[in-house]
Amino acid sequence: MQITNKFKKYVSVALGFLFFLLLWEGIIKLFHISDFLLPSPLEVFNTYILMVINGRLFFHTWITIIETLSGFIIGALVGIILGYTVSKSKILNRILSPLIIAAQTTPKLALAPLFLIWFGFGLSSKIFITALIVFFPIFVNMAVAVKSINPNLKALMKLVHANKWQIFKKLEVPSSLPMLFAGLKSGITLAVVGAVVGEFVGASAGLGYLIMFNMGRLDTASVFAAIIQLIIISIVFYEIITIVGSESMKWHESEKDNW
Image 1 (spheres, helix red, strand yellow):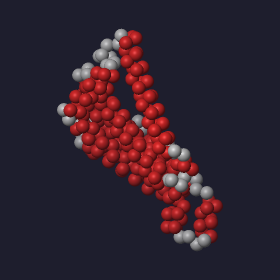
Image 2 (cartoon, one colour; image 1 turned 135 degrees about the vertical axis):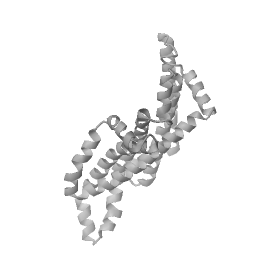
Image 3 (cartoon, one colour; image 1 turned 135 degrees about the horizontal axis):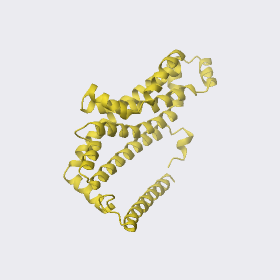
Image 4 (tube, one colour; image 1 turned 90 degrees about the vertical axis):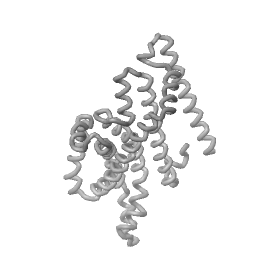
């Protein structure tokens, strides 16, 4: 049954992708759009293959992956720790929540030049921007998840003389996983955005840099090739988080019919 559902999923994705390509090509033919404005799918594919063969695409992809994963791990860890801590302390919640919200509502593109000044044009500034973008959804989901735990369950565990570690391990962690993985899914996609934003502002490598460089050369096909690579790595990272979440929450209702 599970194999059949997965097969249906892959077929649906393939058909949707094929429809998108046909629509793309049809719009070009119907409105006689020049390659400069919108290259054909075949031209983008040929450019993508050429960039793979010469190693250029993989080099810039590797830089973006390093920035994405490093920023995601840092942002996720800080978000989980602070989210849990704030949910357990009303004083910290009053002190930290306004500061965290203020940092989140500030446009990251406006802060990016400051990060470049502080951390330089290397990987550090991009990792910091990525971590800052990733942090908030994970922080919020973790805090809400812990606060939403049924107080009757906590009272029951205390009734059977469970200590704080046992309550944390047996109740708080399992109960928080669904919302935490929802935050991680959002975070991993935002991590790619954060890395690219940093590369847009100032970089000498990465897919964001590759997009800006080819835009300056008016090479639209290469821009599309870099965007496609960003989409691919975003989907791969998202699927990895989804698989890890499914394996960690086989007991949860949301995963019983997961396809």
